[in-house]
Length: 111
Length: 270
Length: 180
Image (cartoon, rainbow over all chains, first blue to last red; front, side, top):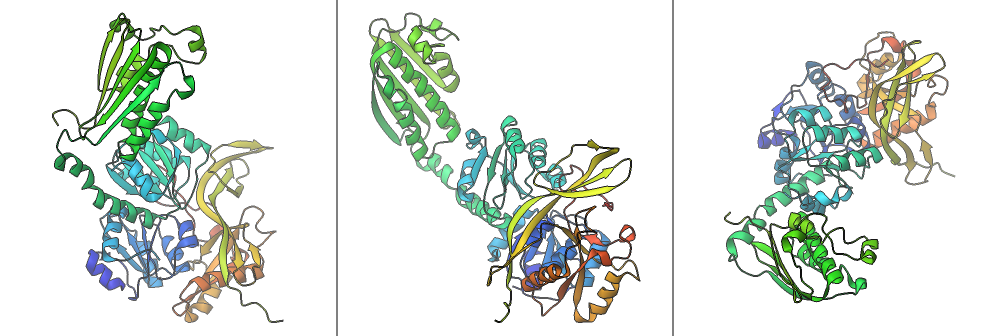
């Protein structure tokens, strides 16, 4: 599935400019250290972290998109950094656990 | 959702408060950020987190969570286990990551909503689910605890709430010990219906002259030998009473005593 | 003998904390790895060290799946992303020079205060760079990891250290303060 399709399916709100690409698998964590160790290229990263350092972390391991859950307000500098790296930064009001149920329903599995 | 069911679906190992596995959690909160747990976590939830620190436990406790699951096989240090133990939270660890853990709990929740309800609605109220008879020979301490252990494993097999099983097991054990100390032998009948668990124990023994007195805390007729084994701080009847929903004691001196212990799976009238 | 075309994987991964502590007298900063978060203040000579932060971290080694060579990275405190804050900083110059090749620059930090003397060698940073690029879809972009000694002035650098601070705090972190 591509990022645009995912946005349509889940009603996500895109916050940054990004290049559409294929999503392969889901990675969930609120920790950069976890992402550095375990996220994979093309993953969808789901987190409640909004601080701008998520973008360098996401970029380092080449995740396709970051979804900020629980309706958190994302600071402008985080959005700007996502723009610069062309990483899709998306948001949803749903909490992480609920969103996973929907993703599972869409057949997006962990890689 | 029962914590035990979540434990099974996550194949988690229990690090603290195994005794609380029978408790229900009302929501799942998945986060590594403790400020979020405090801000958004609902009481009686289960926390899924990759943050292996005592702080996770403290935050969960503040937010009135009932259980914490550490992901990716992470282990918290002793302090966390102690904290969980002291504050009545189940602490578990699973090898799964957050995604897999969430998915399995979703699957469990979707599938689970149906099963327990069926038990109550589709079965006739007095349909007998399980019936078993046991014999206890008095004065054979090597077999002490045999019946309560059997009862415990049978109830576990049919999926009775572990907290309730514990109450049944404690009551059975106390009653069984009374037989070893005071009676020649006894018959035990275990009956389980969708509504209740009933254990009836009928012994052939000297009987209890004053049942009311025997129900008082601290009353004992145990011999010194028996006390040395750690029994006989009382007849165990007060402890049985605490653990049962209904207790009937009838006794005839010189003949024996009958205990009927009932544990409700569904509250009468509900 | 042909040289091994290494295929790196992370091994011996241990989750723990980078403890940041500061002395109220000399204003020195020290960092170290600890398996458990610590909050105790202590004295040492004329210094009183108090904990500023426990950042969740990961320490690891890399191992080649082909030749089993192992490279230790236990002295790596973290990676810092260059935010282009000082024009004449060598890290920023490298960032600018490599931008057309879609290469992102990161600076590797060791633990303080020993990091400057015992810098992570260029050869090891090359391996770390290879490891992350092997995990990435390099048709899109690459990363390059440089030593932090190239930063012109660490105290003025606004680079973004990739680590997990504020995880244990009961209050949300409104604004992250630089730790050094």
